[in-house]
Length: 129
Image 1: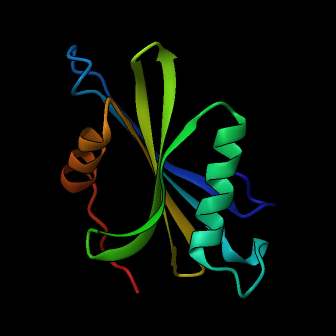
Image 2: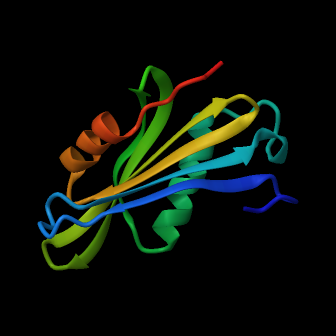
């Protein structure tokens, strides 16, 4: 948690099934909207995160797109982290503005389908305004 910066990593989950195709990680993060321009769009935030991850060696598989997760509209982007020739894992970044924060979900899995399954089965958002 970064209190002065008004940022927090709220949840970290790692699922290691022994079958690499089923493994996933998921994190939920919050970042105060006070840290950003008032007129910023969520797609601009996701694009900036995607560009930072590209600088770290990930490759964009899918640029920003709208998606609804647990009834809440998000903007997402999918990246791939190559680990060996023809092998790697995917990382989905999803963000929304919620109650004065940028709430982000960071999901990693073997492929895009595993990321979709994880979002649908593991995450439920309640008490939203």
